[in-house]
Length: 406
Image 1 (tube, rainbow, N blue to C red):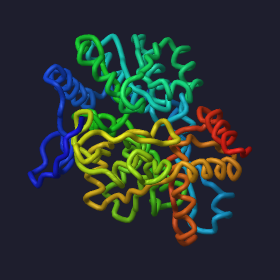
Image 2: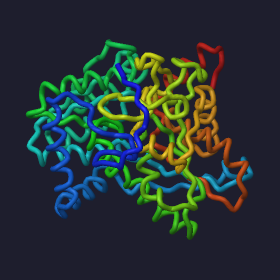
Image 3: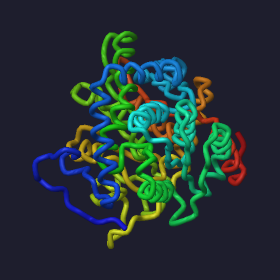
Image 4: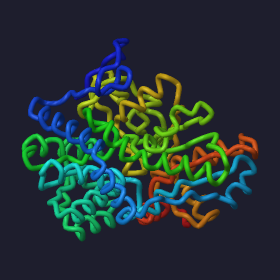
């Protein structure tokens, strides 16, 4: 159940972004959250911790990720220069590894021996399983049965890495329900378990921590763009489910007024409640999974069912800082349909030889729409948050059901 609330005009507090954020959790988790916040702040002030994190980014994740100019796609669209921030080239195939390496290091610092996580598309699950294997930690990942079916490759990868994949059959069988089960586990195991939350939602300090570990994306992109073009991009575009890849790209340039930012949510089958996962575009303020943000809910405050062709975007809430950016007008949020995401995936694949994840394809679709409306002197940067290998079988099945072929 969620609780409808109006944004408060009170002064911001620790753990809040404007009126959004906070810690709406059972008492059993308050000690673990306080410990996590203390250890995170101490770790980020510790030169040895930061050096070890940088080493992990280089040697395990394979950072820095490339900045790629889409020559053919730019020419085809006839508008702004299009660049990709190639998070799909990271080890494990997505941006998720940036966060899991950082949180696994925190777990080791706190003396925790076990990691748990939720996953939808499986990319966060694989990244958590990888970090657990690197540091010799036990690992359980919660995943709903429908996502286990459509992301079979990532399920196998997790098991190969020594992680136990726990099927979730409760609720609406979406990412929300996997997160519910992970939090239930954590409430009973906080003494030896760290919950590696995969996005910028959840109770404080998770939004702060995940944004910081993902901000490596935006810091690199900023430096790379200045080196390539001598200036910052005019527009940043990223997909938004919970919002971690978008926060990672946006945050280091949020104070650069010349840089416009667009977050793209899952428009699914249409904007009727239950057919999409566009919390910022169609939701209202409420509490979900320990934080106050925009969520999809019915008139009684019950969490609404959601849908997206992309397993990583079908979440009925969003990180609280995104809610703040929406209300302030700093970031514009829009939605992309399932069909447009699949079409964008095919377009990028054939234009540049790069197969994007279905999640990232939502951002690509918005760029395809936006770039031709901008002058040729403009620069548009897409965060390509993940690669599409994991989605190929699902897309093939969708096309088969439609009577279409690649």
